Image (cartoon, rainbow over all chains, first blue to last red; front, top):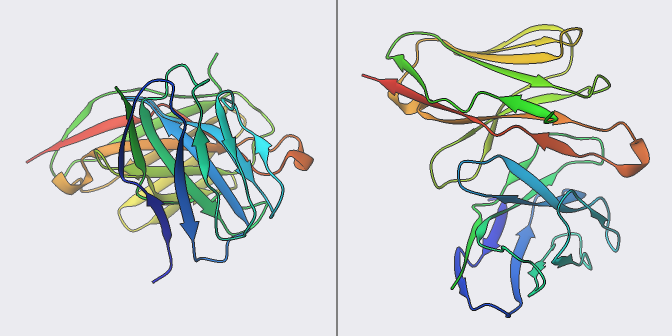
Length: 113
Length: 115
């Protein structure tokens, strides 16, 4: 079955530690996205990538980093520079550069202790 | 002013009634509009997309778009308890095509359907 797989589903981190969230898709989609959702809030765009080896900052990129070495994979690193990293992180993909219909993974819930 | 605004709710509707959700957006050049449903603790799923003025119907859902007034709405007919969720409005803010496709989301409206 095609879809987007995010791991881990739940993650606990101590302050000052970097963590990497995995996102893999087998939909053959060109574009991939990382969003952050805080309780009771909408989604805010962190980074997105239209093609392999290229990515752009979204609205809240500070304290995050990404890579896109393969079409299928778009990992997100939450660095120690991110001041308030506790949130629900959602990875998504879309068919093409102009598509707005996003398919989401199940999400990763990060808690900083 | 937020780029995409929604009433946070909760919008409480009796089972079988029509739920009406509204969304306004600030970018007059926006061209694509989407409604996502998100159950508590889950990821969003696309339920409707609309690109031109007027109504678009899909089952019990109807999306309405008015670009002149910069609003998009979602109607849920014959509401069921399983429709209880948060509904997110998303707008394609692709003013700069070289920047690619970006969706801007509203804060969501929580809908509660009471049996």
